[in-house]
Amino acid sequence: MVPDVSTGSRTRGLLSYLFGPGRRDEHTDPHIVAAFAMPGLPDPGRAPLDQHHRLLDQLADYLDQPVRAREARLGKSVPQHVWHCPVRTAPGDRYLTDAEWAEVARRIVHATGIAPDGDDKGCRWIAVRHAEDHIHITATLVREDGRRPRNRGDGRRAQAECRKIEKELGLRQLNPGDGTAAPMPTSAEQAKAQRSGHRQTAKQWLQEQAQAVAATSRNEQEYFSTLAALGIHIRYRIGPETGDVLGYSLARPEDVNAQGELVYFGGSTLAPDLSINRLRERLIAQQPITSPPGSVEPDRWRQADTALRDTVRFAFPRRHHVDEEVEGEPDSVVQAQAAAFGELLHTAALTAPAYARSELRSAATAFNRASRSRIRAEHQQVAALRTAAKELLYTGGSGKDGAAAALLSTAVFVLIAIAHWHQSRGHQQQAAAAQQALVHLRTAYRQTAEPVITDLTRRTPTPNTTDRYAAQVHTAVPDHAERILADPSWPALATALAQSETSGQPPHRALIEAARQRELTTADRPAEVLLWRLRHATADRIDQRAHIARAHIARTRPTAPASTVSAAPTGYRPAQDPTRHR
Image (tube, rainbow, N blue to C red):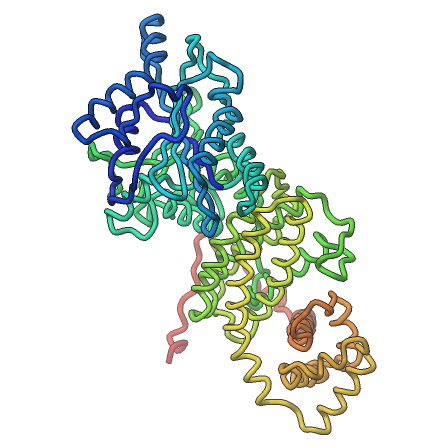
């Protein structure tokens, strides 16, 4: 059951919509099911057509009487005096009777402070049903005694009451809100998007664009310049004394109101973590990576994989099962890890092999909800992971050699761990979003892993060598040996063992070290998990040897006599060798 509280200024206009046919003729039998005073209350929905408009006027005047009295007393208008709360059952729920909806309405106006039980001086309200699955509660926000109602936090209070009602009426139990979700688009915004031919409302589109840009930006200037490059209009809120940017609003191109003005949405309105302050907290937590002069360009995918493995090691230490409760980093650090992981999904979606990008975009979008909770994130503690995520944007390749698949394999485990962490803290909405993201991430992983595994399988060692590796599996990982050898990816793992052995690591030791990194019990394909761990370790050893070799060459290279060395003048540029490009 989903309530959606909003306010407005035109009682008559809202009533016309509630008792009318709807924007797409979707309203059927509009009628009042509950009100602050039912006897004698005009019901335009059940009146003859020739009386419909007259009764709408009467009902609007009746509801507005306390508002007009307050305006006459104070000599000024009451702003946003119309309170509106549609309440809808979840898809698949049974249809409630009018009597049940009436009780739902009374409980919600009580819980929100609009009209508390036993308070004869509460606000005037009605509940209109014009469809099987929902009602609309509308009230005027001036009490009978002329005071304003105490309805602060009414949206949160309505949500909490709906959770109780669902349980009592046997309806689908929805996840409780925690105030960190992005606001849902209103029915008016959805109708406007349909009329304009857009798949998403302006608010949804702007939210997705801003989340993706924030994940890929290194500083505040880059964030706003990228948004502008996408054609998004930006309006800044400037401090009158300091001239600093205190906030901002965004508008979708060509999204205008009836007056032809652009419709802007504040950053915090789009999502809590898109406010200017939350953005600055994220963007300043960067660790610029600088490679030494003459060094080989690092593999950004493997760099990100290493940072992600460190996330598991430090955020979830000594965890042998993803559902095991152990003491780890403070919740504020784990929350920061989740936020940085969300950025990694966004950047991976831009640079992964083309065939996996759609699923990664879907995973990143779904995970946006799981990347924030009421726990304040310590972003400075996860600068390495956040920076590794940004560095993916500057990789020369697209991870086709298996580095992308290895990263996504680690990401699957991290996402499972984050989902469990949210679940254990009672973050139901975040846990559900993480599970939704996991479906897309697993699909993206399979898309990137299959070509690599197929190639490795084609290069499986000879039967004698493969049998020798199988014996090593039995001695190194006895508890999982049968599952590993029965895994369809076992031939590819045998190839990885051969590559590891060639790099100087005995297969038995390589298997022990790979198995020790993290549990294998919950792995659907344990051979595949070991495969990526082995390839990661083998690549690290090869890089380390190459680094040692380059350092040795640098130490033994003869240097020119001091007398032949002269300082270059300022601004000096060496002449181009005319034979260089021949």
